[in-house]
Length: 100
Image 1: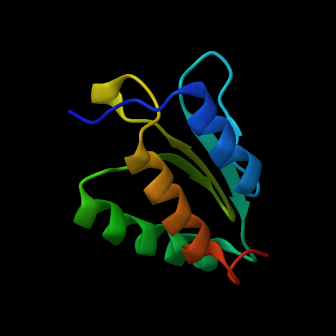
Image 2: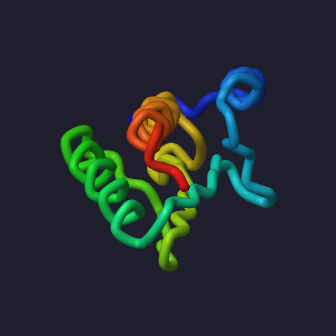
């Protein structure tokens, strides 16, 4: 089982990670991405999906046209773990230069 991060570790990540925020009422982090159009959003989601499958850690997300809302948490740890932060960093890299 993966170790749930403490409040200080999550806060340190959120201070340096642009756009990520703590989810109110739950132990998760979230971010919204807005792309130029649906195709750009779908391409981004495809890149993230391939990586998520590779590391066996999958985001909760919602896509409406050019907007993708992502929430990360590790369900078997009941909160945010290093796996979530690793995926968040990849997601930011995948979005870099693609957002509208």
